[in-house]
Image (tube, rainbow over the protein chains, first blue to last red):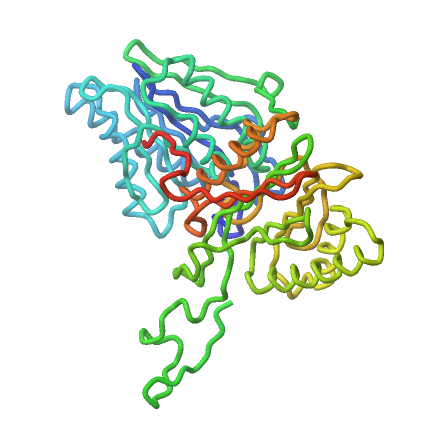
Amino acid sequence: MEKHFTDSRVKGVSTGTTILAAVFDGGVVIGSDSRASIGGDYVSSKAINKLIQVHDRIFCCIAGSLADAQAVTKTAKFQLSFHSIQMENPPLVIAAASVLKELCYNNKDELQAGFITAGWDKKKGPQVYVVSLGGMLISQPVTIAGSGSTYIYGYVDAKYKVNMTREECLQFATNALALAMGRDNVSGGVVNLVVITEAGVEHIVIPGDKLPTFSDE
Amino acid sequence: MAAASMMPIFSQNVSSKSDLVPDWTRQEVSTGTTIMAVEYDGGVVVGADSRTTTGAYIANRVTDKLTRIHDRIYCCRSGSAADTQAIAEVVSYQLGFHSIELDEPPLVETAAHLFRASCYRYREELMAGILVAGWDRRKGGQVYCVPIGGMLVRQPVSVGGSGSSYIYGYMDSNYKPGLSKDQCLDLTAKALALAMERDGSSGGVVRLATISEKGVERRVLLGDQLPKFSTH
């Protein structure tokens, strides 16, 4: 079975987590749960924000060691704003993803964090990139990560279709996160979603009691 | 799991750590697998993939993991192939004997308890995760889950094996109580196909069986007949 981020190698507070991002017709939805735990035994925070805004239309979500992820995103945010000033243009989503990738790859021995970057830019429209633990960078229409993601691979493979509408994509993301939170004990809390389109950025929070329920609950 | 051993090759003793000895000879045979069982009104549907691995080598790509325990009781095996085969043989024998004594077809619950007794007593030595499913006159279709460690619990739908993690979400969202036999078959085939796509230790064909009062119907879904999902 896949190794979770909840084993003893993880330092300190970990976002044993479920994160996902999906492209729909006209934008992307990026979402996560909100639980932070220590070693899978104690929930250190019930409602943390794992969706970090690194630029106007680019968000990234974090999985793994919370300390590492916060340090990397802080550095990336700075580098990206500098890059954007130099280019006199908003950065491309792939630029943001590459900045994270460089940090992850060059410090792979010390770091234990993975990222999903999603956003919108003028050149390629809505995009999703995933930077894995060792520093691999790939682009996918939909991607999931974190300890809770193992439980929803089947659901995502079956349910995701390209060119969904915004509402369909939001429902898909909510269901996927709710299912993962239902099976993974280190994912939970509320569902945080961000919808990024050319027009702007919208935050949606779905508290625990408003989450979709399934037949066994 | 990988025990260091010396293998004689051309009258030289070659340590098993060398490149001359293939990796898979040192690995235990495992049914890293995906198995599933669903109850419906009147029977059960059981399904499994067909891959048996020794390390990275697929020792059998057309394995039958749905093992007959009695006329209307089957078990789905996951974990160590040797352990599960041995346990299934023991339980088959015990159940057959019990059924003759009773002069009646045995209950699924009895079979499940026999599996649990063996799995719990020898829990330190064994690595076996088993789903027991079947039909009897008293309670109809039943599915019992006996995971590693030797717990016993009855569930309307259950998945097991290494590939099962990937389909919990799919199963939770698509199973509802009151499905028909064909809906259960469809759900099982799709769930197994999804798991086989993601789990390296599951693959091959999908074997399905339906157990009801009428008897057992078996089916195989070959590669080109497997349900497909939009590729992305």
